[in-house]
Length: 251
Figure 1 (cartoon, rainbow, N blue to C red):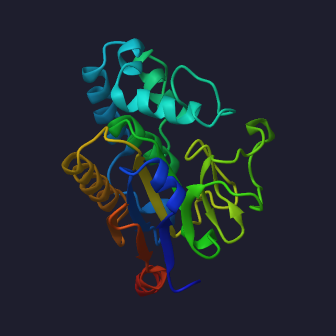
Figure 2 (tube, helix red, strand yellow):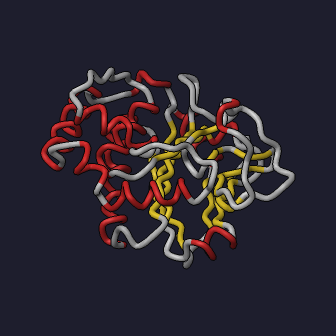
Figure 3 (tube, rainbow, N blue to C red):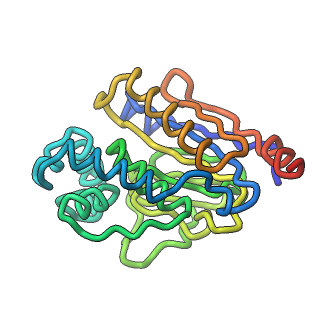
């Protein structure tokens, strides 16, 4: 395991979205998914109840500023997936339409619930599978592409992606994550990433979401959970993997 990973915002993505804010919540899950401390059903029911109190219909959800901004962001990539509701918000749509929601006690379910709670796309990456440093920037020729379903099409110049030293880790910003870095029941150190590309949310509200997500993960998982923000003023941060590793060994 590397001693640390640097997370950096690239120059091109900041030039295109100078107001970009990225929330970063890193957690060590030292005994696997069995460490969940509160009922996922309870958490899910609370979030679904709140969602239904905010929106009376899918049409009202479509008009929410966060949803409209991300729909515009995805469409700016040209060949991006076409959807009235952007993919990260499809669970919200299903809840409002009365569809049955299956709740699993895993990190991906937490990611989906966070997206419903905050109406911001969330990406989850297993940091132990990242090679080198983690960079969010616009796509450049020469990146290796693997671990994605074939129906996503070719990567476009200017498409925003997370990448490491071995290649691209996400498509269309946060629409899909490479299987190479997706979490599994054996994952011990993961990071949740959520972004606001434009002035759709105040710094105070963004920081409140970051604090609440960090607190929820602490309640759910235990271990070490830390939240941080990167933006144009603070475009790099260090994630100390060795610290999480020492904590795992001490349990």
